[in-house]
Length: 281
Image 1 (cartoon, rainbow, N blue to C red):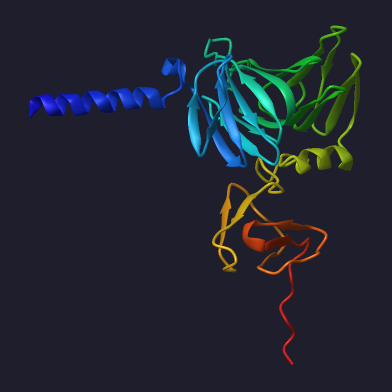
Image 2: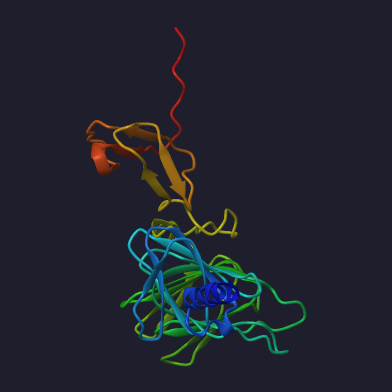
């Protein structure tokens, strides 16, 4: 009997070991799926999709696919929200006396960061894009990178808390709240946050509200799934919100311009404003 118990315990330990990412001794951050398809990979290993939340070791990649969003929570509870089609490399967390932080390399896509302000220390958080290094502390902001340009947006940034070094020229720029920096062909231009900039981030599932209120995600890519169609009225909503609108579930075809086809012939229609109650007669 003891032999059977020992064998069972050994199997449990082996299964637990295989459930953790390789190199998990240095785990201090988590990746959480918010909507769509989210995965991670280590070095050159194949990507592994996640269904909920997973602990990530140092130097792991986090990836989102089309119409997908994810949340990375760091050791000091700072949060990085990933929009759709985004890839980031999460470096080792530094807890040195100079201040906590990490280097996060943005290989493509859009993200929203909410970095906690360390008490009496300088933050070492640095976001690296193909054109710049962005050092931040105690800041809420947005970053996007594409083959043609990078954009850095300050939603809530005190003077001195955001420093951007443009790689091509070495020029250093300091941003404050409501600043939007565009870097193209090695040249940086600072302007004000405008509707087009915020719309681009919101369309990728990130909250881009000036001032930083309203949470990390916009809800545009909320993960709403019909269950058991054509049986209407049963919905599962995962990791997102539909605010100020109405959801209509039908098993009949519809030609509404914002309708999304669903399995089983049903349709979800998200309207732009609340549907008023019928007027009594």
